[in-house]
Amino acid sequence: MKLATWNLNSIRARLPRLVAWLGLRQPEVLCLQELKVSEEQFPFPEIEAAGYHAAVFGQRTYNGVAILSRSPLQDIEVGFGPQDDDPAARLISARVGDLRVLSAYVPNGQVVGSEKWAYKLAWLQRLRRHLDERADPKDKLALCGDLNVAPEARDVQNPAAWEGSVLYCPEARAALEQVLAFGLVDAFRLHHAEGGLYSWWDYRMLAFPKNDGLRIDHLLLTAPLATLCTSAFIDRNERKGQQPSDHAPVVIELALD
DNA sequence: ATGGTTGCTTAGCAA
Image (tube, rainbow, N blue to C red; front, side, top):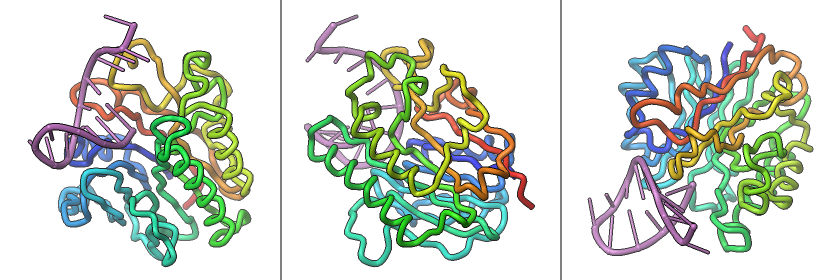
C-alpha cells in the first residue's frame, strides 16, 4: 500500500489537482496539510467521490490538516488532546487497521528569534511529549507531514545560503532529532542516500526551475513499520504545470495488507 | 538584487 503526505497550500485552490493525483497514484492513505478551510468548507463530496474517507481538522484561512483513506478511519484525535490550548489546527491522527497515522503541520517559525520561532521549537517539543504519552515505538506508527525542517545538508540545495534559516538551522535540526529519538526513522532516507531531492521550493525567485529546494516534508516510521517500507519517492512532477502547490507529495510503499 | 510569488481576504499576513 502507498502512504503519502502533501502540503496542498489550500485544498480549494488545489482540489482539481488533488483529485487527479488520487486517481493517478491511488495512495491507500494520504496526509494533507495547509487545507486553509474550516471543516464546514471541506470538499467532502469530491473526496468521497474519489473513493476516500476523510478525517479533517480544519481552520479558516490558515493551517488545517486531514487524513484521507480508502478504508475507514478510526480513533480520530485532533491536536494534542483535551488539554491542548494550541489555537492552530496542526495535528490530526487516526488508525487505519493496525496502523496509526499522524498528519502534522509544524509551525514555519517565520524568523529565527521571533515569537513564532519560539512557538515552532515548543511545538516540536510538545510533539515529542505527545508521542511519549500516547504512542509506543513498538507499534506501527507513521508521523507524516510538513515538518518544516530539513534534517541535513544533503536535504538542502544550497546549505550555505539556507544555514541559519528557520527551515535549516541547528536548533530546528536538534528539535526534529528529538522527535526522531522517540523511535522513528526517516522513510525517504531508507531508500535514497543522494542529495538533490527536495519536497518544497519557494514560489519566488525561480526557485523550482533552479531546483533551489529543501526536503522538509517527511514520513517518519517506527521500527516495525520501517521494516515494511520497500520504496520512497518525491512526486516532483506535481510541482510543475498550472497552479501547483509549493510542495510536492512524498510517497512510500509499505508491505502491509 | 532587503528582491520575488501565492492564497486568503480584501490591505495585510503568512509562507
